[in-house]
Image (cartoon, rainbow, N blue to C red; front, side, top):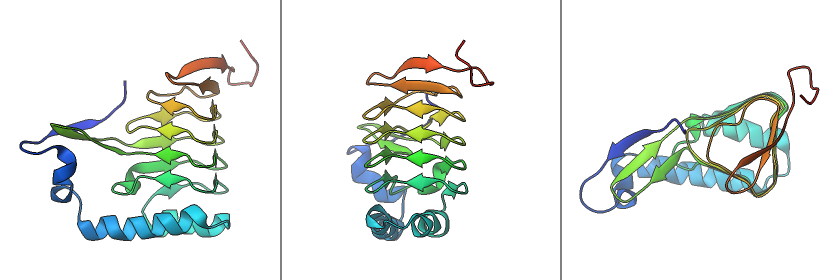
Length: 167
């Protein structure tokens, strides 16, 4: 189960009430810096933008592929460990705006994690150290360390012991 906090709303759907929860200026600033980082091929510049302009926690030597889309409104809720790879066109969300509520949840991606291209990571999930997520997956639940997962719905494909040996 994802770890999200639910906030009920009354009246129009929660997305119409977005700017009651997030400053429009924060949204505009984040959007501009996210678009710059999506197209920047220099990894050190991307990581600088994520850390200093968006407030994300990004570990040393983590690499974001081109076109990665991080959460526009709550990027500060995203933590990625060291030496991880986030594949091309992956989306990492820390919010969900629904009809009668919105939800926020921290996203924690561990050390030495590989996220395949075109993956969507939903709010409130933790992906453990050394995990591998296959391309095109939807991560809607926690992923144990050292586990290879994939698909939609997400399923375990293989798991390794802490020593790196298949059980």
